[in-house]
Length: 217
Image 1 (cartoon, rainbow, N blue to C red):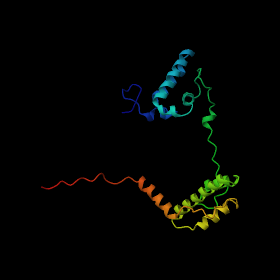
Image 2: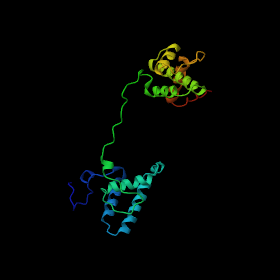
Image 3: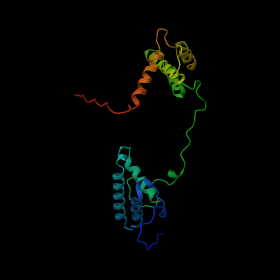
């Protein structure tokens, strides 16, 4: 049956105006629209505070967010079309704050020299290269060498000679990082063993506990 104003049937949501912030639901949106009709400023302030309280109860996890009440008041303004005039504890946000698209995330201008190592490891090498010579720089260099070995083995799934890792860390650092000759880089077998154990632990075991067989007498 087609819905009319005299029809006892509830209207479909598709026949209603779109919600500004769907997460809060239609009841909150109607409360905000009601607040806009209140002429007395003090009463309007009290209604706005009550709406904020209900919004906070609907989404208690927002309390874990820093300055979550500020976010709730911003949402209240957005749902009112920035028309709500109340004495809020925070200034009314500018509409363009929510309408302008976010800035594009810049991508690295140059790809990593070795794709399996990635840009993060290259930044680690740059950081270590800028350090003063000493025990801390040596320890950092060793950690980077082990990480390079892990990345290489997991990416290529094959054994790699330590001399290659030594050569590449020296190349990527421009000769500023050199692994000590007596340092033993993590073995490929250890990398595979540890990585395999992590994967096995993350995969749930099929089936439940084995049932005990009943003894036949």
